Length: 178
Image 1: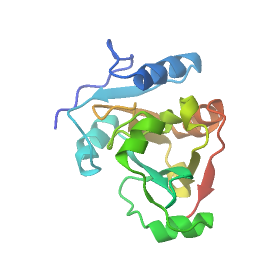
Image 2 (image 1 turned 45 degrees about the vertical axis):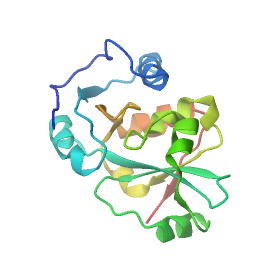
Image 3 (image 1 turned 60 degrees about the vertical axis):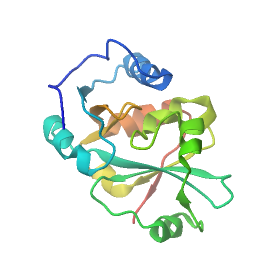
């Protein structure tokens, strides 16, 4: 897996509108970050070398929905923690959640499988998505995630994600214990 050296500036060329919006927002909110360019990292297994380079753990960000595909959840959990839909649904008091289809992931969050990110909440079309965060994520000083692409990962302070980025998107994070 290719992982570049640490970079502290935006990419010279943006691959998506979301990626451009990510760096514009970080600049506007004056949030420092470190990032690495990578080969295509789609699974949490692919992220091990990224974790080492960034010196933080990349979170697992899942896009979920109810059976009717009318309620959507962006769930952030530690990358090495298994996901059990029953436990997630039980913690929120909802039943029958599953992974949203890749077409809806792209339509609503403007990302592809493997690139799901909290930054998609910046998009107007994601305004009705509920952001749910595993309480274990809050125990880490740093938050590793994609910039909306599966070949650029970044490290931010967890407090900046929770206290600045999520409120900036007009969302409120629901913190759950699983």
